[in-house]
Amino acid sequence: MYIGAHVNSSGGVWKAVGNGVDIGCEAIQIFAGSPRTWAPTVYKDKDAERFREACEDSPIRFVVIHTIFLINLASAREDFYEKSVTSLVGAVAAAEQLGADAIVTHVGSHQGAGFAAGLERVRAALLRALAESEGSDVRLLLENTAGAGGTMGVDFDELGALIAAAGAHPRLGLCLDTAHLFEAGFDLRTATGLDEALGRLDAACGLDRLGMLHLNDSKTPIGSNRDRHENIGEGEIGAEGFRAIVTSPALAGLPGILEVPGFDGEGPDALNVQRLRDLAAGAA
Ligand SMILES: [Zn+2]
Ligand SMILES: [Zn+2]
Image 1: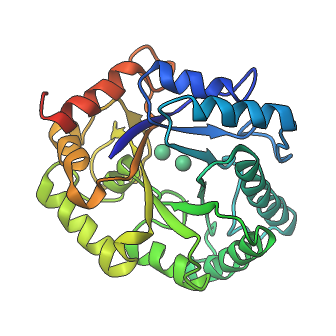
Image 2: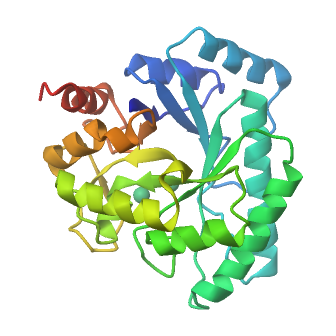
């Protein structure tokens, strides 16, 4: 696994590369523009170029854009749904500009309408986004949820159903967030628990759908359905759990992106990156 982090890209998207390198990343995740603004970001050519050049001259091997938090691909509200699909398509276009490998998105919530009703809307949204970005190599990774408020994709059967509904398109994949998985009831504290979860993933979706991980410890207990990220080794999953994750042969070669609060409260930092590296090397 190669270790990365969500990094700040304010003040010029190319600055994200240096921000990642500064804390020891080999992979970075960014928001394209403000995560709370609907309008899709279109980069100036020279800014996108500068980003690509910065990546080439760096150890960064994987770049992913996280879609905005407002997106709900299962929304029954027509205006909200349209804005969500437009935003998803815009994220793929921004990823193309930057030469990014993938986008990752939350699927959204059926808001009480039930999984089946939500599934139909998500299916149409994903097919539109894939069609409107036809010819692109950018993967669309769907993120698992902690399970609060009718959010779609809380377990591997739901994630498998989402992929199947969109015709098992080859560009569709998954991003597993370790905190969300644990909060949804999967025991990631031991290698045995991890292997069991990965076995279920393989059975329901196929392990090759897994495109990346979000490496976050959890502030809340197993099965809480409450999403609160914690620094690596400081939460309920703990160091042993992360040792199993970063040394798992099934996960080797995947990027693992930190979205932790950081030890100074300013987001992913060098110490969290180093903890993961030490666990991977067997030094901690
Ligand atoms: Zn996310
Ligand atoms: Zn989360």
